[in-house]
Image (cartoon, rainbow, N blue to C red; front, side, top):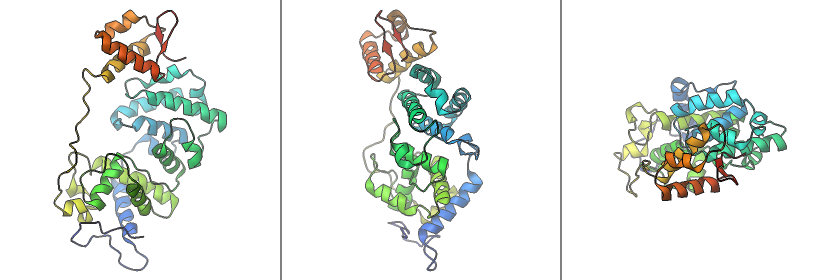
Length: 313
């Protein structure tokens, strides 16, 4: 069904329905796909020879982490573990070690758990069915949809932060989407999917790329946007976000920084680490104990009977 022109628009768009066979959403898809064909970044997980496992690894790594930081880690990971069975054969601590400084290291444990499930339940091959992907440990709605779309060219709405921001501006005329994803956002995203599954998969990555490169959070380049003529937010004068202020999360001095320092010591060590070595990495005892307890609770660190600590085995 046509869902455009966007709410709040006062001028005709360049993708409104022009005849019985041409809907607004079809024209929008063609416009964005044309832009993507010229402007897409050459990323290894988008290439034709990228395996489903490679796509899955990229999706885990790209959560809350910029592409520039992911690229070297992604290449090193696949060089060491080119398929799920290779990773599944290793202890989970090796996944945490290889994860390095990508941040949010629980993703490494989840990816390891998924690799083991793939090896045990699916003969070592990443499953193509959305419900089987969703059933893997550590795989949520977004990751299941992304792997199904990008690895298997299926028709699924892939709603990451970039896509949500583009649709909020383009259709709803607001600068930022709600903090939590809504059912209305999902319905809108699904209504915009082209009917042909491979085209829908390409559309999903194209609209994501538009948000990453042009319709950015802080400095959107509206003059370079292929759909600027029908963007409800631009037509409304780019009104500022009227919800709670969006502040960047601090890092220095936080428990998260303490956890990172302690985990770095364990990653770099050849074996178990005595508590004195961890104390040298973070000298505030109360915060260090709290951070260490959190790492143990998350399964990222194992306390040993002799008082030392190690990565999970």
